[in-house]
Length: 114
Image (cartoon, rainbow, N blue to C red; front, side, top):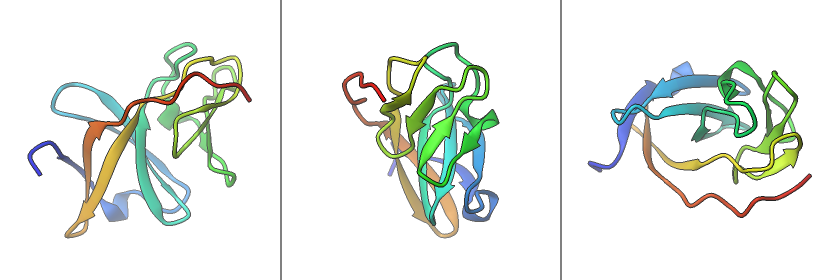
């Protein structure tokens, strides 16, 4: 469990919401709740480094960066709409005792298009 960081209470991440958190190593992470499942991705858009957590989590599971409209799949980090070309990193997430724990990054998928 030592690779996991306690970042928030589950109650702090309501359905359809996103929350910016910082890991102990300084990484900025966007924690989200999509259809009752909590996940986490890197919080900087790969196009222009705008905060993903300041964007929109759509019902179809895409995260939209508000700066230029890039969209990413919330589960895989894959690009779903340009101008971004590189995927977001995806982090492991566990929930335990009412808390959200964010772990190591998964390998990002290969660059993909919409």
